[in-house]
Length: 314
Ligand SMILES: [Zn+2]
Image (cartoon, rainbow, N blue to C red):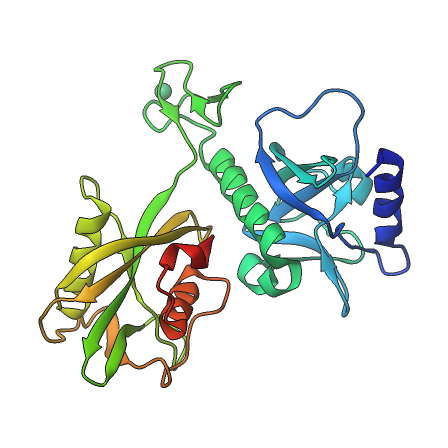
């Protein structure tokens, strides 16, 4: 698409009467970068956060991440900002993306609201949700690593990688990521396959999900999968296979999904965490997690009987 046409499309996407911008429809590929391109400044997507809440234009019809050359055009003055990279459409036109943060007492411009990412998922879609998840983790890391964790000296950003270095003691800190396994355990019975689902005390009433837990230092992902299933419901598993993964920015998890088969044992529930657990047939499932989650993709994999787990996530 010629640049002039793209500009017109962006301009027409702004609904002036309602102050809602609609993103161009044909953009898809995101390319992560550290340094913004030099030269002419074009409208960029600004993922601006007030704490963990994303600022969006919103009315009763639409919701959208703001598109602007500079946040001051929106009436916002961020305390910190980071270039994230760019979105590229099929004609290789690029739209830059930034993460930014405002202080909690900043008044929001007319037409803008701040809301949590979980609540916004269904309104802004997969692509904007994933970029917002990337942005919030980077600005949060920036805010919480202003000083060295070892000696307290103010840190400095490195130029060529997303990292901070202490000029006094040399300690380097990277954005924090907490890997967690999530596992769909299937039991073959004479009445058909059954999926292990459990209810955590923290879940909303009626909701069940697959087993998940954080990886411990020194542990392989497979060891973690066996340990979590053993600790939470007391059974053994076998044939652990990779399913897919999903960044989960609540606050900084990377969910690594596996499937496995039941290999023996009876339920012994970890009572502090698990309220109930059971084996469920595909046609009699309880309340399930929302579609945005890899947990739901794994449950859908079970219910559709897909032989190729990896294709579900790709
Ligand atoms: Zn230091």
